[in-house]
Image 1 (cartoon, helix red, strand yellow):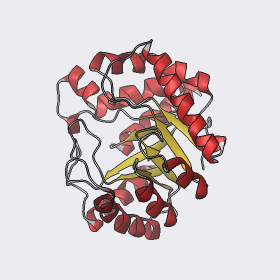
Image 2: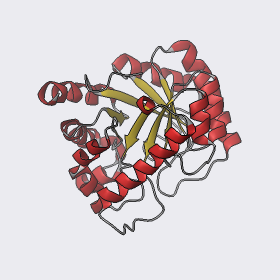
Image 3: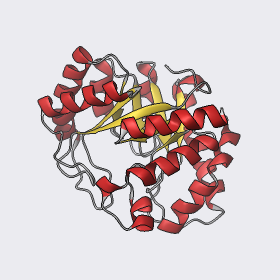
Length: 262
């Protein structure tokens, strides 16, 4: 889908949930979701990532029927109106399948193909891309945190390849904000470059997250500059995709970083 290495790609976040941490309820109607997606594309988003269940700490579980009801009508409208690829942010294979039937190009799985044993085969059947994210319950790490993250990602990559997903369709994500304390998130961000050892494109998702809020002590919507700082440092360390709420601002920063570091 993308020629990794040539530039940083911008993934615009489209939450169609009532309870996402920074924009819950803002875009959970078809008209509002379409308008926001079109704005992000206009601002330079290369891919739109649509999610129907919040994954913030303490979020309310949503069953797959409800998730399908939230995302599928919006995906249909997006497919008719925007020209960039669409990613579905889900860890449930039946939600992914309904989206893939409509031509969605990527599945962004926050559980790294571990939560639903049918997910990898579903993605392979549609020859789609997958973003495999590190995640775990709790924040206890027996070994060095980056070694554990790499082990987890390597095992998930094996699951993907064994199911028939092509190597060139795999992207990895260290999972900032998932199964990690504030200090652990900082350590992962400092050591992002170590993920390049796995030889897969890297996605970084820090946009408006608490790791930024805890440093700056500000509300989610005020965390644009903090997000930009992580975007630039991520690109320096080998990141290929940044998943962000604020497309225009992060794209401008990414263009500068690309000139400096690519």
